Image (cartoon, rainbow, N blue to C red; front, top):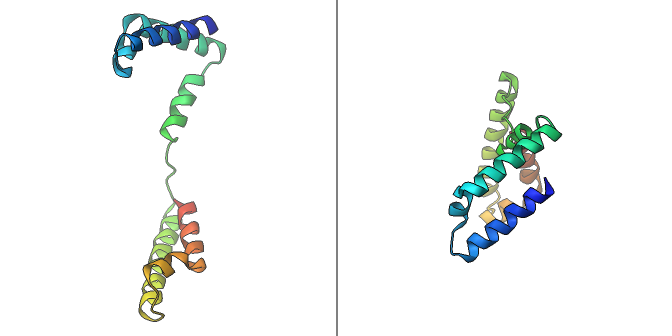
Length: 115
């Protein structure tokens, strides 16, 4: 597998020196075959590793929130908006002051963990 890896790297280096772009290099017949073979070897060595790597690259499946969690999230979003408006209207905060407000930042952090 290491030899295959070094072969791929050296072949790509040759193609790059020949003026090929990254996308063109990846379509080269020899590189395609080597990558396919390397993936087969990786899968043999550690079954399921390629699927796991693809899932991780995608960011995994997004989790669905329960109805209660959705309601909490919507309420928190509404609270954040109301608090933001209150800071602006009642206390005369500027946008810069609002972004620096620790209570608002804590609420936003909670919201982000819900998502």
